Image (cartoon, rainbow, N blue to C red):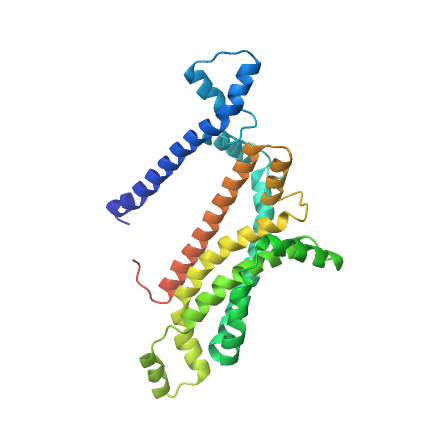
Length: 294
């Protein structure tokens, strides 16, 4: 990668990041200021402007924690805790990652199977696709408790219920992307395969599948992020004692807003890593198929 190209990619991202942090600090001041004024009034304390701003950025349970408070909490609970500790974000991220990967795997396989059926059977295209689209209009917060309760009634608990919720969110983008990918070959290409007297199976494996790979990996990037959301949401109604969702619940119960934001950032970092891994695999597969690097 050329240095100029690298600079063009990094500078815009850093600019947006700096802007977000600046807005975050301003928002933290205005949201924490009323409580700090009340504390100063009750303690009969008169603070200078800079002292008052510093106090709003150092509250133990702020309405909106400052970025440095979240960063400090994130650093402590990631690098200064044992991985097996219940306070370690690495431990909680690993628990959530397990159900995420399981749900993503099942969702990807289900999405591919549905796409293949829709492309080859018109009856499925007309009957199944509308229901698939309609299924995504139901809020996941409404579905998750029902799935947990029904499976618990038949003694199925632990990883599987959370994985199924992740599957529910992740299969849809894969199914839609694969349908578009399998249908992407142009008519002239299909006619060429008929000219070669290729069977339906040969057309599928030698033309449709290779053409669908870019669509598949693009949809998988969306699916892996959706799967992570499903895993976190699945932890909420289970009363889980581990996982990013459990950290969010514990923070909400005890008004530990800094812990809540640190868990959110940890989830975001985990999602970015998962999407990056899918992107790396996509590039490897593309090059193995003869694609040229951009």
